Length: 124
Image 1 (cartoon, rainbow, N blue to C red):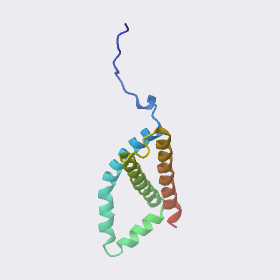
Image 2: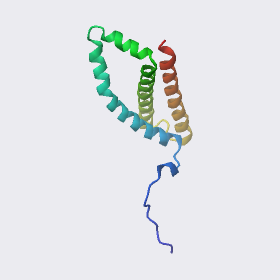
Image 3: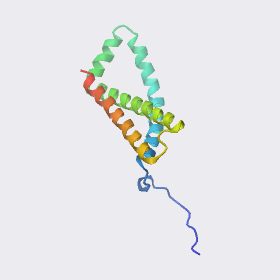
Image 4: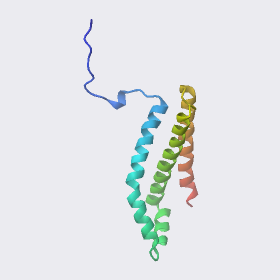
């Protein structure tokens, strides 16, 4: 009888996960990013209430760094929101089978990409 080998090192890049598994990981990462982005957003809100503050923010949003930041923010919020709706569907028993879970995962990614595209094209 062969001796069981214990797993010494976990190499995430060698683990194969289906798309719903990766989306679950991205859900957690997007939640962490939302927490990290909260203080800068509060500062931007406070700055927008000052005289000429809103104008500064709008000028920054039209520049390339602002567009990139806005696209990242919309992508994180969209991914976390649509991923959360997918998890709510899983809680009521919709999407527990792998084929439907994959379709729902692709739908979440598609809606997230559509939101990010809207952020890029919509700010003009």
